[in-house]
Length: 236
Image (cartoon, rainbow, N blue to C red; front, top):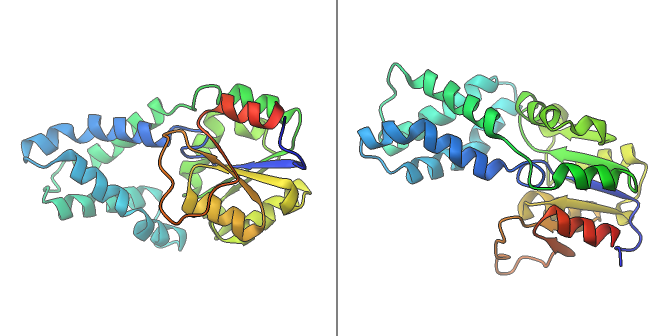
């Protein structure tokens, strides 16, 4: 039986609709494998350091101190510095290559587009995504989400990001729905679940990678591992 009292759905993008994690891992391996082997640096360590630098450099981008290309290059150069890799003449070429491979290989999770189109026949749909304006809109347009999403909010455009309840309130107003009648569907407990709780919404954990719930974290209202399961949960 479908979940009762649901008038609208709001989705996250990365690792909820698009398979960001696996795509980035593939691009990272293809781009930096040779330079890491040449200098005997563990590529997994480089990847972990790079991912850990997102918030610091994204804040600089959000505040207008660096553009998108600088945001990416500064993250890579700082990660290289931390793990002991030299920043050589071909460094910027590597940054461009990484983004090119990522853009070419980015895919949605199986069934995502079909299920979203089906859900659009029953609910107004919205999207809230954290990230830089250009990068997020490129992904949004690539998978043709403007065709089915009534409201699309990118944190870089809004100047606020999840889990701040204000960005959820803007989405709710755009969808003309109340928080208690709206489900947030996302993969991030820190951003999506916490944000949904902050805004008074119920939460569907899109746990595609079947991660364990951290000890002490509140139980999500619902959990799915695929878009097929999401469809069954919402449409029966």
